[in-house]
Amino acid sequence: MIKLSDPRIIQFDKAVKLREESTNAFIDYWRDHALYTSLEYWIMVALLVVPLIFLVFKIDKSKLFLIGFYGYSIHMLAAYIDLFAINSGKWNYPFPLIPFLPSISIDSSIVPVTFMLVYQWTLNHKKNFYVYSTITAVFFSLVFKPLLAGLGLFRMYGNMNYFYLLIIYVLGFIAAKLITNVFLWLQKKFTKR
Image (spheres, rainbow, N blue to C red):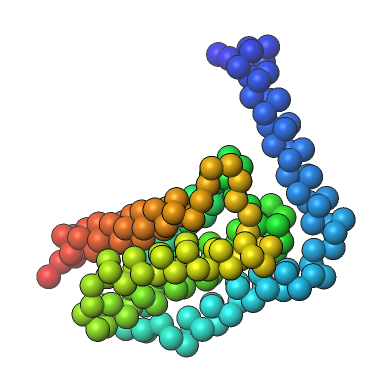
C-alpha cells in the first residue's frame, strides 16, 4: 500500500496542483479578455459549426456508419494528438471556444469532416485513398494551419514546424484507416452469412 507521505505521491500531488493552476490561468485569460466577444472567437465557432452542417447534407447515407466510424477515428486521434501537443507546449489555440478544450473546433469538426468527405469521395469514385488523403494532409499542414497562424488562431512553440504537422496528419489518417480496416475485417469475420 502506498502511503500519502511517499515522495512519488507528494510529487504527483504537486503536478496535479500545477495543472489545476494552469487550467485556471487559461480560464482567467478567456474570461478576462472576453474572448467570446472577439471576431477570432466567432471564426472558431464557424470552424466548428459550418463543417458539421455541411456534413449532414453531404455524407453518403448508404455508407453512414463506415464513414462516420472513420471520421470518429480521425477525431479521437486528432484530439489525443492535440492534447499531447498542447500539454507539452508544442502548439495551442489562443481563441478557444471553451478554455479547457482549446482545439475543439479543429478536432471535432473541420479536420474529421474534411477527411471523412475525402474518404467518401475515394470510395465512391474508386480513387486512391492514400494519395487524396495525403493531399488533404498537405493542405491542412501547409495551407490551413499557416493561415490560422497568420490570423492569430494557432501558435506553435519550440522546434515545432509545419513539416512536423504534415507528418502528424499523414500518420493520423493512416492510423484512422488502419483502425477502420481492422473493424471492417472483424465485422466480416464474425458476421454470419
